[in-house]
Image (cartoon, rainbow, N blue to C red):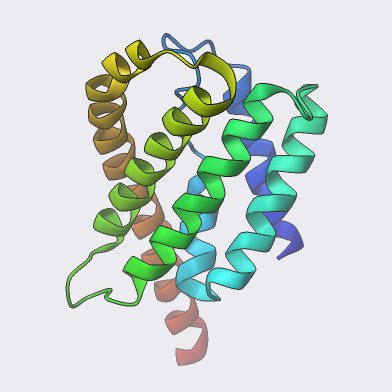
Length: 164
């Protein structure tokens, strides 16, 4: 789990250095680690990794207790819980990409609601909803696909190792 926290924190900081065209909107590369943690270990472990990642990443990026920290933590917790729920139906209803899309949608909706309730307090923020939802869909597909490839690679590697 420590390795996962380190990789997720590194991805979080790396992504914070990339300029973003829309406030609060990031691709969410560190969510690859959250999705893999849910798949491999469960929601509890994924939440631990998420909280440590957000705290460490925010400290390293100089944004601890900044509005971005609050948005990241609230959106991340919601996304992890939603992905955990969806993962219970993996292979029956949801693929890895489907789980990721649900997580991305819930994360961005949560961030928009938190931004409204705490920071902006103008209903016009809802005009960003179509942009956030379409971005969530794209990010969810990409993050889910990358997580799927990593998961498959690990499984193939483990199978080859056991075959020896």
